[in-house]
Length: 134
Length: 368
Image 1 (cartoon, chains in turn blue, green):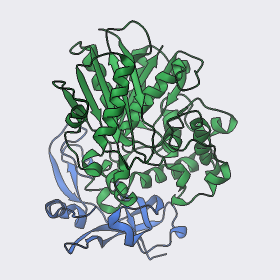
Image 2 (cartoon, chains in turn orange, brown):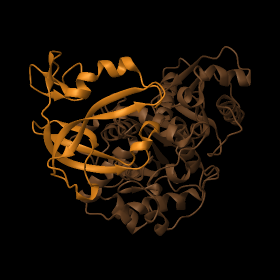
Image 3 (cartoon, chains in turn orange, cyan):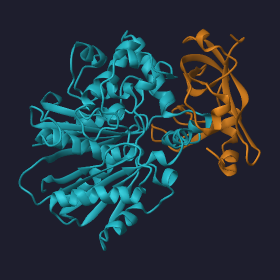
Image 4 (cartoon, chains in turn red, cyan):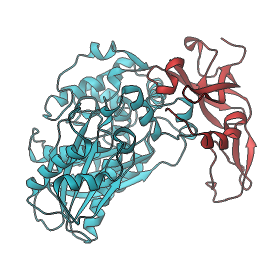
């Protein structure tokens, strides 16, 4: 979408750059995207960085994309289970889709997500790639 | 509490209406529904998903009423994404049950064709978590594709089995005078259509269409189709943290409550209109509603007809975003009474209206 918001991007940088999630101090449940209240009822949550390794659960190759992703299409969209059991959806890069299978070892990489051509704003975030490349 | 009757209704042909502004389109269909009901309304509920983003209009209800010269009527806009229609009908129903109002109208309207197709993708993606999903380029289609892939693997179906959904929808849509694509399609057309997010192909996607639908509901009538119950439920789990991907949680709960309140079971249903913005959602909806056992929908279609989406569903009637839920209620009421549609053999119909990828579902049970 044209004209992404700088304040929105800025305040989400910890999540986008370092996968900062929220962990319940009472029961230990981890939430990504972060939440305000744990399902156990506790409102005491702390920031925690998620591990950067995991395994692929499933993926798709998306050909119909929004205006920001026309130059990047097709996008590989994956669901990854990190080593602590937390699951995250993310783009998959540096991979040939037909060689990806559920269970493929994945790692987090830091990449450019959107470039706003009109204002020159470049926005970054986490993506996934197969460990060792395929 | 008083019963809620469907006193009048009207539908607008789904399609590309480049010559109409959104408020006028809604006003025309509302005017027809009011004439049909021969009733005055004391409140209006407007269901629209994307009027700000696609049509640059806030306060849409005020401009619909301006177009008809109807002063002093309270109007409320309801936005629950592509499930706005069901949610607006639910609020209208409660307003009548509480007897705060005696006759109200619900008009659903959306005009996605006021913007280009890539902009439509941008807008539809705002039904996802805008900071953690849309930001990274995900769209509802990509999530539907992941769910389809997992479903086909788990229940050992071939893609061809899923493609039968589109064929079934088009065969039903032939009987709907308001459908966007009112024609039969062949299985090979579906199977060979363009890959949009594997395993899903173009024929798995309900085309976005401009449209408007209106229904007049009253609590002072004695006969005609009646809303027997309504229930809405939210699935508050992120897509990435769902325990299972082959069930619609929001629908499961809404259906359980709606059937319980109406004192009927899924076996009593003669016609159902479900939210199949993508074929896989239709498949999951049929199962989560309880019409077919889990994993059994595609086998049921292979074996024969399924009295689901006699309108043609999102594939043939079209995906009219926030208006769709209102279309569905009118379609079910007309299928039960044999108006505009072939009359179904039975007394009960059900509607499933869903916002987002299994975020919010409304289930409406209609009876005659």
